[in-house]
Every structure is written in C-alpha cells, then in structure tokens.
Length: 209
Image (tube, rainbow, N blue to C red; front, side):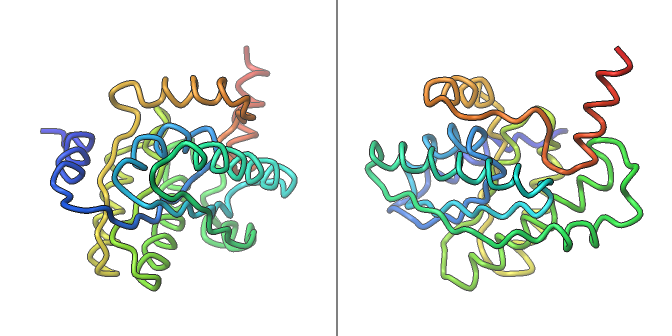
C-alpha cells in the first residue's frame, strides 16, 4: 500500500505542542511559495538555497533572486520568522556526483543522486545548527517522486539524528496553489528543472513535436 506522506506531515504538525525550528531546502522561489505559507504557521523557517545542479550560473542567480524576493514578501505577512541561508554555487560537485548518469531520463538515477545530494546537505546543516526538523520543497512538483524523496529523508534522519518532516506538498492542490502564488507575486517560473541535461530534454522534446 502506498504511503500517504501528506497525511503523515499533517499528523506531525498537529502533534506539535510549540513552535519549532525548520530548515527547509528549497529548489526555487515558485515551488517554495506555497510550502512556506503552509509551514510558517508551525515553524520559524530558514530556507536553505542549495542547488548545485542548476546550470548555467546566470540561471542559478536568477532563481536565487526570486527565492529572496518571495521570502521578503511572505516574511512581512507571517507571524513566524522566515529567513534564508544561501550556499555557495558548486556545479562541479554536482557534475562529479552524476558522472556516468548524464544520459539518464528525467526521474531516473541522475535525479535520485541529485535529490540525495541536496537533502543530505540539508540534514547535515540542520544537525550542526540545532534545528528541530529538516525538509525539502521538492515534493510540491508533480514531476518529482515523493516516495523516493521521503525515503531519502528517512535515511538522512537516521544518519544525522535529526527529525525529517515527511511531505507530499503537491497533494491538496499544493502545486496549483504554488502556481497561483507565483502569479500573484509575479515570480519567474523556469521551464526546466535545473540541470543542463533536463534543459536538453526539454529542447529535444520540442524539436520532436
């Protein structure tokens, strides 16, 4: 039977007795918009912008600026604190990790390595800085494998001894709400996931049409 990670998330949130600190990995501003508005009712949130997969560098900066923009907008409306922790751009590390997987299809082994790279970084930083929970916005996308994301989260919870917040943020119209918020705040919505290989896949698909 398939696990309902959306319900597991709600159960954790409903059992919280006091406000906690969450380190939330974000893949981009648009995806984080709904997730932040949902979770800020329960946590002080630090958004971790760690995305070494994004290429080229100009695209990385463009997306980072949109992330900063939405945090500033939402922070002014939130009862709890929202801030950002910005990691250095390290596309070389990503390329090293996915070497030999460049031709994998979307949602294949290359993406699994990419998820793990970013989620493990989040868990490590959360542990080092005494956060109560760590999580990622990745599951808000209908193109991302929520089951795999949560399995990696569980693995990192055990490795780093820090609580993983289960999620499937696309459920209950989460993805639709993220689009609506992106339109409301005039956010740049990218047309490819992030890595140069996902961009090539989009280009090839368009050429085949």
